[in-house]
Length: 531
Image 1 (tube, helix red, strand yellow):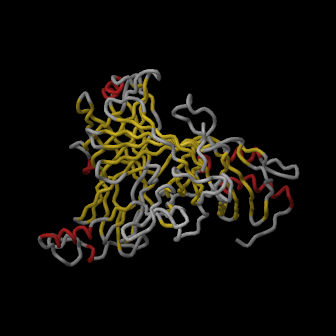
Image 2 (cartoon, one colour):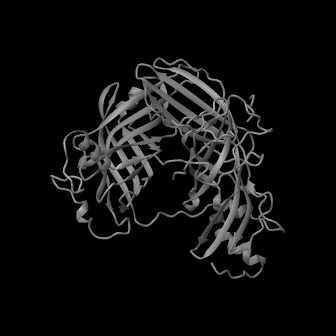
Image 3 (tube, helix red, strand yellow):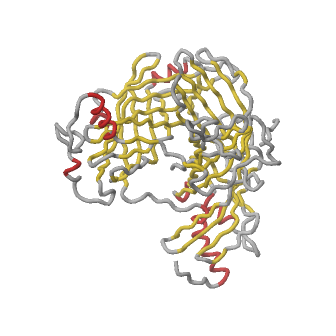
């Protein structure tokens, strides 16, 4: 892309009945209903922690909310969903932050979760991020984060337990005086308090070979004993064989594995005459879900092509603890020469009997801006990457069917402006646009975790959906109907970007690599949407 300089159907009786019926069901056509699946358990745990701050060790309260399946099958991977981590730090912690001349703080949490089955264990890291929070004038500071959670699979019969462990909180501080010095950042390490109930137990998921629908207790073959802790009919042996078998028995913690372009039908993702490639050009697929708060539902965005022109890094503001580089990149959706997503259809049963299908696209009104900040902490051997994606996008409804009967929405049915978010820097980024945020980290010698523009990852945000305009035909005005049903604030968004294909230095599949680019320079990796 160019870099920017700056069921059996029954006929309805008459048009009036169609419109009246649609008034109740049209929203679901826009956003497919996604009620919680049966067989799930909601977990809410409140745990005491001790956190180390500049003023010393201070008590903190950590609340973990998540949803787990009631049961799972052996070898069946599942992902805890709707994970929210709330940290309440005491007033003394606020004093530590204001001493840095900070007025607000953005948090990123890394919660270590111990996963155990019989005597075997594994470790998962639950990551989350928050929007900026103003520091209170008095009292405690409450931080609420949401983010990535790996999938987990039990290897055999037996309960799979999840227990909270160490917690790290990365705090990016915002200055009280915009013209003053950057207050920098702070990492707070927290440990589970000794009096924590049940050693931080969050959830227990029974696992059996019969799968989630199996009843009764796990089979005897899944039972553990002192001499056969894994229940596999073999006793432990010394040395590497025992370690290898222990690893094979351990619960499997996996990131949601992306596929490749050959695995599923996706639109092409190629630069063209409208987007002439350069050595700084990147191509990537993005997919995910967008909630609609009014209907407690979510809409799936299929894999869509993003064409990105990466900017050059420049030195950022001074920081006593880190060297900073800032990069501004620009992006467009690419679909058949237009700056939009592919059309996506949603079909469901409204009121459990009325099939409704809608077709929609997201359209750009201006280039998408990507702001990335890298911080190199040499003493810590740590690099952090904070990325903000600012996208002006309108939602366009192109067709609608209710009970098999088309409902005319017209050719110009769309939101009256872009989906909007609260921008953390409105002075430098005015106007209506969606804001998505991603954070990545890399410890020297290790792989990147979280989001990075080149390697991809998860981006999250919250949007307000504007009122609708131009909806209806033949004198029927559906604007107010759609606005009342859909529009409003507080709609959570979670998008996953795949590994980019860098046109300037393409990596093709080979003996020692899965590759990043096809022979015609399209991205190989197709990300998997996460809720």
